[in-house]
Image (tube, rainbow, N blue to C red; front, side, top):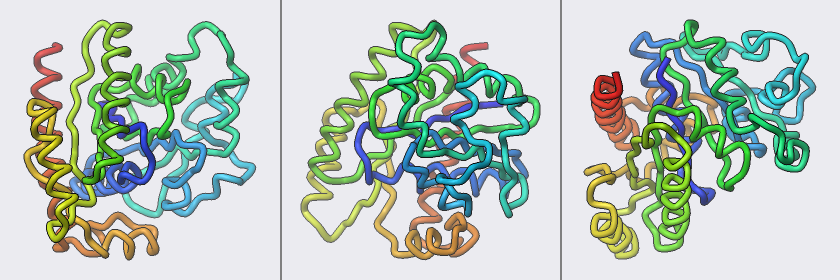
Length: 260
């Protein structure tokens, strides 16, 4: 199972949309995909029709012993080949609860290893803050996707994210391969163009050569609780994410071969 984390230390940049859309495209290709909602806000959980305030099993249980096998905490969605490890608002208490507990940064990696034979891909939707959940995601992932809204303030979140990646690379045996993805790009505005130029100048090696455009169909897909590829497969947004998936698959395969 290949594990991709979708992360940025700023909210509202398209992390959940990116994770859900890529997962939807992969599942339509016959891949077995596990979505992992690591954000206490539970946006992905709600998107897929589950309640982050509910009493059922969730990712929170993985951080507490005696919660049962990992497979029992995962739910099937209404889409073929697509399952989800739901979030709960209780995830927000983990940093305080776990404190300096040994091994707290490897809980997700160990948990996913238990179900690695059941899925081809796991996509982790990360919270926008640096804490135990973000550390777990970066420790577990084979590839990192960093969505960045094409506007000035989002670039500050990208700077923080890149510092976090550098910090994690010191702790890992191998650096984290990553791809920066410009999202919510509006060709009609000067601000989007300037932000994109800034990213190209500062991150020429790690930046995807295309963009994810603003598209009202994302809103329609979210309202329907479906990946955009199943709602409007020919829309600008869906076509752009299909191109992104090709790029990520190609790079991830190259990194996997190099590591092997």
